[in-house]
Each structure stands twice: as C-alpha cells, then as structure tokens.
Length: 256
Picture 1: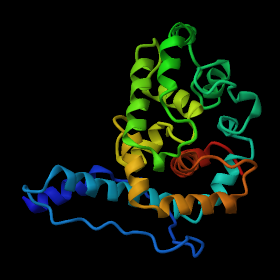
Picture 2 (picture 1 turned 45 degrees about the horizontal axis):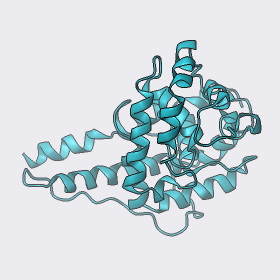
Picture 3 (picture 1 turned 90 degrees about the horizontal axis):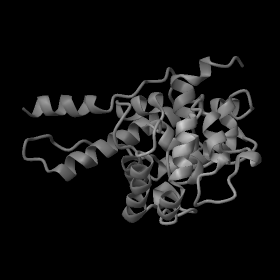
Picture 4 (picture 1 turned 180 degrees about the vertical axis):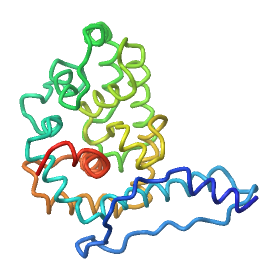
C-alpha cells in the first residue's frame, strides 16, 4: 500500500522536463529540497497537501533553474510576442483598478483570447457587481503575501465572472491577472500541465502556498529578471508564467 501511495503521489504533478538544468551561483542562498514523508494510509490530509506543495515547488525550480530561463524571458519581452504587451503597454493600463474596462478587454486579446461580443456585453452588464467584489481584492499585494481572505475575495470575483457568457476559466484568469498582476496568476494550459499535471482546477492558492513554503522561488525569479534586463519589470508570477510557457511551448513560435 505504501509503495502504491508513493507512486501515485509522485505522478500527481509530473512536470514537462526541460533539456538542460543547473543551479546558477546567482541564486541567493541554498534552495529548499522537498522531502517526502513516509506514505501510509494513516497520513493526514495536511501531510499530503504539504507534500504536493513541495512537489509543486520542485516543479517550478525545474523551469526557473534552467539555464535558458533568462534568455527566454528576454526573448519574450523583445516584442515579437504579442503577449509581451499584456503587462508592459501603457496604452493597455486600465485607469480604474476596480472596474473592467476596454483596456482589459484589449489586453487579454494580446494573449490570444479575444473577447466575443456577448462576453463584452456581459461584462458591461455585470459592472456594478464586479466592481463591488474587486474592491475587496487588494491591489498592491503579491501572491506570496496574500492572506486567505484575499484568496477568498479572488474566488468571489471568479464566481461572478463565471456567470458571464463566453467567459471560460482561461479568459477569466487573464482578465483578473490584468487587474491584479501581482496577485492572480494566468491559467495557461501548457503552464498548468507542466507544473501541476492538469489544465484545470485550483492554481492560485496552491501556487501561493508553494511560494510561501519555498521563498527561494521568488528570489530566483527576481534574479532571472535582473539578468534578462527586460524593458519593464513584471510581477514574479508573470515571470514564472512566461518562463514555463516559453520552455514548454512558446520558444518554437518565434525565431530568434
């Protein structure tokens, strides 16, 4: 039973493994290596969840410790990828952090998610309810520092967005990520499959917990951004999103 349990847990979040891996000297301090406790049927839910968070952290390190990470981040933000405008273009910055505007609608289109007319009308019709809920979501809080109350507030906005026609979970995440770039991660199929082994389900809270458990992830992403020297600093979770996406899929889309 213990062997079966260990095998099942080890396959839960199988990453897409990049070709070259190393741990550069610029990483501040030693990174945490997750240790898996003895697996048994008596193990508590908290123990299992903690192990999975450790594996998510290790999966993240698989990509951000890759020696291509800085070069790929720099390549993405050189401008050939339309998504590079999502979080750097002044023209796409919404003037109201608590209201979805045309700036947000245009921004998600740069990530290959153009909104349908029905979706735009639904968002406009839901403006009052969405604005009330967005006011409860902190603006200047990084995901690593997010409280459970902040996560709950995000989920409340997600639930309201789910009522809008033609707004799926991917579009929903990109709208929210544009309103709260420090706090809400983008849900991309390649990134999710690489980090958590699936393209659906919860991601914001598990990612928050992984960042809290392993602070070297944030330190490493800050270092990668510094080396990449991209024109404008982006959030930690956006840098993670771009690096994983480029390694698993995006690098082949645009020639060097």
